[in-house]
Amino acid sequence: MSCEADLAKTLRERGYRITSQRRVILHILRQASDHLTPGEVFRQAQASLPGLTETTVYRTLEFLAQVGLAHAAFGSSGKRAYELSEHAHHHLTCRKCGHEIEIPHERFAALFAALEAENDFSLAHNHITLFGLCKNCQRENEFSSEEQGRRKAD
Amino acid sequence: MSCEADLAKTLRERGYRITSQRRVILHILRQASDHLTPGEVFRQAQASLPGLTETTVYRTLEFLAQVGLAHAAFGSSGKRAYELSEHAHHHLTCRKCGHEIEIPHERFAALFAALEAENDFSLAHNHITLFGLCKNCQRENEFSSEEQGRRKAD
DNA sequence: ATCCTTATTGCAAAAAACTGCAATAAGGAT
DNA sequence: ATCCTTATTGCAGTTTTTTGCAATAAGGAT
Image 1 (cartoon, rainbow over the protein chains, first blue to last red):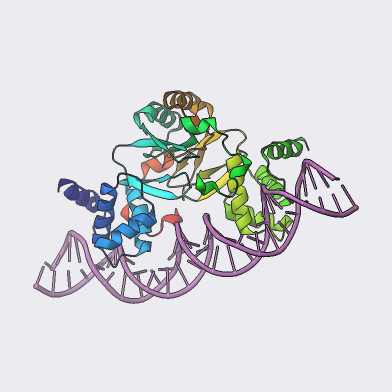
Image 2 (spheres, chains in turn brown, green, yellow, orange):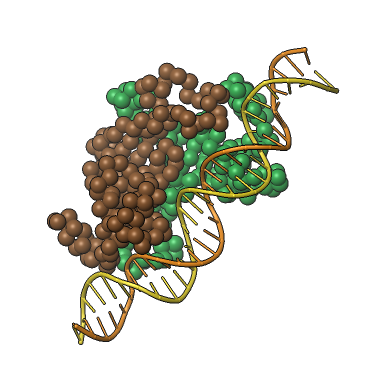
């Protein structure tokens, strides 16, 4: 697999090592169509690598993000979730029903470039999640008092 | 205090109640020059309201965000931090030294408006944090292997 | 001022994240 | 194939966030 070899090279060059744990976790992220929380990754990874620790998952995920292979996004619940960096995109997430609309990175590219230039800053590929209300949920009241205490029901 | 009365009205209209806890927490956020984590808010709040629980702080902060009075931002560490919604702005945060550059919301306004129109979406005021490297840190290597294991030292 | 409804809080216990340190194992060198 | 250095992992323990439920207290009505 070319991307495996590629990965090896990338990491090695920077002084990191390739381990079964990293391979498994990376593989899971590749399969995933969606963002995965550390817990989800852990559960899936357990299957192929029984001895794996939750701690390692957290550290590996964070590691992948640092190296740039993956990045963290914050879901509507505020829980951290990771996904591969490939095909940069962002999300509009409905705070009410959780519906997600994907926005290609290109839409942000110009603004990002401008900000980088103006501030002498080098932006990493961030996954941005913008919260709001989707078409349907806009009609109803955003957060009527009756919903108190049963937010997850939505 | 006008903003207090204003707050009262805002909440009451929506069916929420004003409690000493909410007042204290909101007051702390007003004083704060910076974002505060739930833990920080809790510690400060303890002073004026000894009986206060950490749980309540978490819930109140989340509540304020839902109601739109405050919003959560995710610091470089990924830790959640809250601040009042007034004077909308965003941040460019250096992943290495933690330096933060404030970006006025206006820079994002046009893009946000376009995204809202294109997707039939109503965006809430999100506080965006874009990570990257500041001017100074760009010179050095982003994440050389020697830094492994002592990231917080930077 | 007192009563009533029900939004909020506190408590206790669980789940999720994070840390320090000793043991393990990549992978370059011999 | 074996040795060596040190990046990574696992373990055990700590802190941070959440959640369910009963007790408390806002604030409108009487």
